[in-house]
Length: 273
Image (cartoon, rainbow, N blue to C red; front, side, top):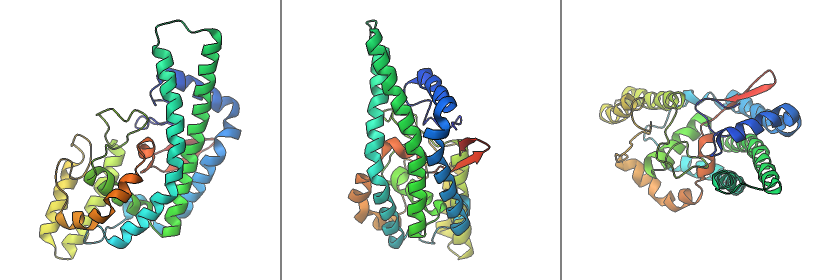
């Protein structure tokens, strides 16, 4: 389930303790506790792809973003927002485990069992909610007739490029080293290249060059964010500005590492990319 670029389940601030507990939970109760939400996520992902295409196939509008898109994107964010509180609640359990591990005094047996029980519940909770969040996102996108590629294009430009939130933040959102993985950068580069191609074909060479520079830089930039430490084109800012408070209020740092993700099933296991 967890890849080297994803830290959802085994790296949310509690290291090997969570990894070991997760392994036990998957072995003993994974079929009952975890596979159902992941199966639903996989099914909804297949429906979304069959209906609206693969992530890297999306071709942005010539203007980059349209207000009608932002309204649909906002509707999707509203659907996802209730789950953010659940991710925050689970995050507090991971943080409590970190504090427990760092305390100087030797804990009693009762305290240790209580801590283990709390973290096991958190692992089960985060696993189920990853599947639920992914399915809910896919269903909301189908309702809005928005492909995952279109959603990712808007999400990255809004939350990472414009509002400056770090990519792939999670329960350790105070860190400064969040960045997109190599696979995620390639996906974003594909979307940038699609935009460059459509602009060039339409005779907008000057605008195309602006986006081509972002495509050329993204693989080697510090975070893999388009327009990182640069201003977005003024037309995009004008389009986005009326939504600033709405989008800020719907940002969920604990779920940021899920936003670009698809879940695949192979045999009895699941993996993300």
